Structures are given as structure tokens and as C-alpha cells.
Length: 456
Ligand SMILES: Cc1cc2nc3c(=O)[nH]c(=O)nc-3n(C[C@H](O)[C@H](O)[C@H](O)COP(=O)(O)OP(=O)(O)OC[C@H]3O[C@@H](n4cnc5c(N)ncnc54)[C@H](O)[C@@H]3O)c2cc1C
Image 1 (cartoon, rainbow, N blue to C red):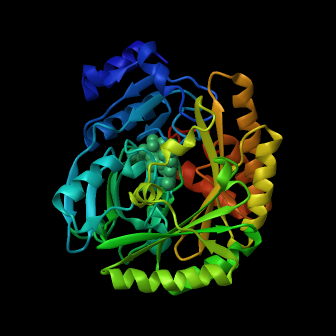
Image 2 (image 1 turned 180 degrees about the horizontal axis):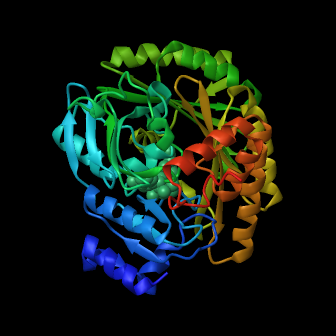
Image 3 (image 1 turned 90 degrees about the vertical axis):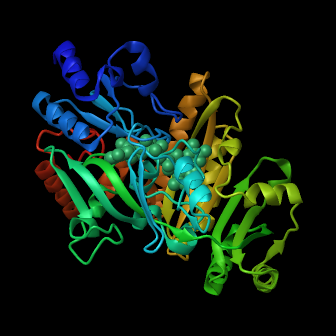
């Protein structure tokens, strides 16, 4: 590869200020805040338009250089660190909110729009609408989160975020710009459309299928009031019964669970937070009474939380970053695994065992998705980035946790390379074959984030 001539071509496409291969600029892109080992980056490019993305993809095809699309780079599992070198395509300049449609309740945005940006835009201009966003830091992009099928405070009621994509504009690996969803037929980006649905190809694909330049996401009405019913349970075995009863009421907007050894008062308990919404105090009171009864009958104790704590958790999205750095060393990664509900008690027990084995404070949690059709289980490991042994322990714990999730019938979410390999090993061979056929058809030169979802 002639790096100098490629840099000149990249600069011609995006302008001198937005393409680089200087080592100071590449350094930060060679790593992420998780436990992955830093890897080599050849170029960083920040396109400003879909046409510029198209030109970059065409160039990458000619030169056979890998492209790694990146949003906020906050996935933690190394997904935006190139496996085989190449161009990191930092999408943050493409940050236009193109349209808010308050009737069909969608937002059409460019791929670099952050979760903080869409939230404040709606708060300022459409105070009755709310976006589906995660509890991640506000510099995470909406696209990055939707494309990894993330979840957030609206997911128990409305489903996972990947399912809330109405339409995409994609630059395919061959450089063609393609629209998917109702926008392929209509001026309105209101639905995936009653046409063959290919949007799923780009979800959980980690940039291996193409570069998303625009997307339409569903928006939801904002409730007048929101409250939390806190509870404590000493035996996780009672969780499935409790969760089935809560979800059957239809009251819960969000259900979050946590079990951790720190702070001391939480040790030995599963912490339950059921969020409810309503139009009036009476509405909230009625739901609260029903839920307290359900907690009692399922061996959970209702807990009156201090106002300060209640206010902290009522702020949606919650400030999860504050709780991530137990180790005080700036390192944090978790296996999030999509799990069947009945395996949750075992996941809590065995997850804590893995953490203790590697000298890490057990920090476990879960969020329900789509009325208990899935539960995402978080096995979190914080580590001191300045301590190589600490990081190695976290990597070992993450690996064992991926194996545990698969053994329990779950599937690791936004899995790092090792996790992806374990999933592929367990995957039905015909699914493997189909993936390979699609990959090689769309991307014969293997330029799209190669090394990820690498089917042998
Ligand atoms: C403290 C903390 C709390 C978190 N809480 C949550 C939570 O509640 N829910 C949740 O879901 N996640 C959570 N996360 C995980 C993660 O931060 C978020 O999901 C985040 O939204 C990911 O977005 P991103 O822009 O950082 O994606 P990135 O890491 O930049 O990208 C994610 C993946 O998408 C691909 N990609 C990005 N942009 C494009 C594009 N334009 N075209 C094609 N592929 C693309 C990338 O290649 C990569 O594979 C949390 C993380 C932290 C650190």
C-alpha cells in the first residue's frame, strides 16, 4: 500500500483537515475504553456527506483497504478498532437532524448524530416526544447504538433499538448508495414497509455489510409523570415469577435489576427498579399499589428510597458512566448477553463466581426487553487501565462469561472478537453458510470491517 498517495486521494475527497495518518491522530483510534488490546490504524477519515462516504468506499475497493465505520466508539468491546488495519471512518461530522415527523413519529438523522443531540433537540422543539436511547454517555451516536441492537429506558415497553429503525440509507461495499425501508418507495421514512425487509442485515453486523449514512428512528410520546417502585429480593430464584407478574400488568415502562457487592448495603440482594408512567397522581398511586402487592407475593420487599436516589434514577437516561468505574482506573467492559428469562437466577449465581475468581467485585444487572421476551444480562468488570494484570484478569473473565452465556442458552450481545468466535462455533452451519454467502456477495474484496463475524 502506498500510504502517501492514498492519503492524498483521501484528502481530495474530504478536504485536508479531515483525513490523517499522523501517529498522534491515530493513537486514540487504536484503542477503546474496554479491555481490548490496541491495534494498528492506517488512516482516520471524517466524511461530511454520503457522496464522500461513497468515494472513500470506492477508493478502499480499488486499493483493497479495510474500512471500519465508527460512531462514538463507546461500545467497549473493541468493535471500532481495526482487526486488519485500514481506514477508521469517523462519522461524527455527519450530524444533521434532517426531519422530525411528529405525526408518524419518526426522526430522520445522519449517522453521526449523538444521543445527547437528539435528546436535547426534542426537548427544545418537540417536548411531547422522546427518543429511544441507551444509558450510555451522550457522545454515543444513535446509529451506533441502533446498529448494535442496543436497548434503553423504552425497551421493556417498545422493544430493542434495532427493531425501532424505520429506514436506512447505506453505502454498500461496492460503493452504491441504497435506501432501505418505506423510503425506498415513498417520501416518508415511516416504516420498514411491506416489502422484503433487508434492514436486519445491517443490525449486529458491526459495519461488515456497509456504511449507514442516514437512518429513520421511531419516536415515542413522553408521559406526563414517571415514578419508580424500588424493591429488594434476597433469592434470585424468585425473579422469573416476579418479572412475569410485573410485565403482565402492562404498567412497566422499564425494569432494571442489579446485584452487586458494593455499596455494602446492596450485598446479598437483587435490587429491582420498576418504572411506571401515568397522567395523574391517582394513576401512579393505583399502579404503585398493584406493584407493591406483586412484590410482596413474589418474596420481594418494597423499599422506600431516599429522595436523592429516586431523583438520580428518575433522570432518563440514567447516568450509568458514574457507576462503571468501581476500580478507579478508568477501565470498564461488560458482557451483555441476551438471555432466556428462566436462566437468569443461574446467570446471577455463576456470573458472581466468575468475577470473584478473578478478584473483581461482582457487578451484575439486567434490563427487560419487549415485555419479557428477552432479558439482557450485564456481567460488568471494571479494571485499572494502568495495571496489565488487572486488564488480563478482565479479559479472562469476559471470555469465561461469554462461554457461560452460551452454555445457559443465551447469546453475547455486541460481542468482541473472542465472543464472536464462540458464537460462530455454536451457530447452526446453514446460518454460517448463509452469512458467508451474503458477505462475499456484497463485499467480494472483504473491505468492510474484516475480522469481525469472520466465517471460516
Ligand atoms: C457507561 C456505559 C453505559 C452504557 N449503557 C448502555 C445502555 O444502556 N444500552 C446500550 O444499548 N448500550 C449501552 N452502552 C454501550 C454503548 O456505549 C452504546 O450502545 C452506544 O450507543 C454505542 O454507540 P457508539 O456510537 O459508541 O457506537 P460505536 O462503538 O462507534 O459503533 C458500534 C458498532 O456499530 C458500527 N457502526 C457505527 N456507526 C456505523 C455506521 N454509520 N455504519 C455502519 N456501522 C456503524 C461500528 O463499526 C461498531 O461495530 C453503554 C456504554 C457505557 C460506556
